[in-house]
Image (tube, rainbow, N blue to C red; front, side):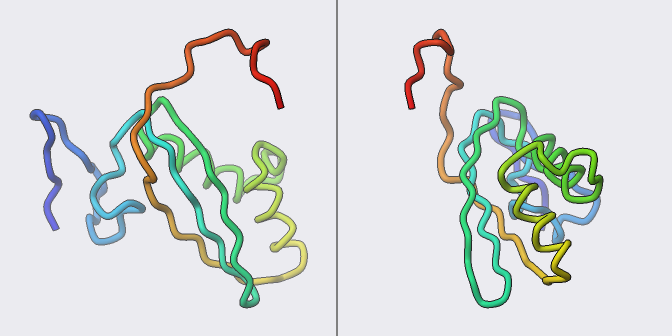
Length: 112
């Protein structure tokens, strides 16, 4: 697999393109992504968004999976550490759902 370009911009800079977390699209930015975790026959989904390139966000997720000091950084990292604490093996697949501009409004206006 070769790194594709969009508007003269690389879409992947992985050393081993066959191991790219997003099949050669890891440098896309402003994306909404999904992580699908499978453990013990159960599937769980996590939806995230990043303004940076996905590879940077992915590396931060990996840090939170390896370093217990970051185990509460995201809901996904909490889930992974729960699996690790129970000696449960897991697999995660990553997918870009769509590209989207980041939210530029006032955070205090967000209602849950």
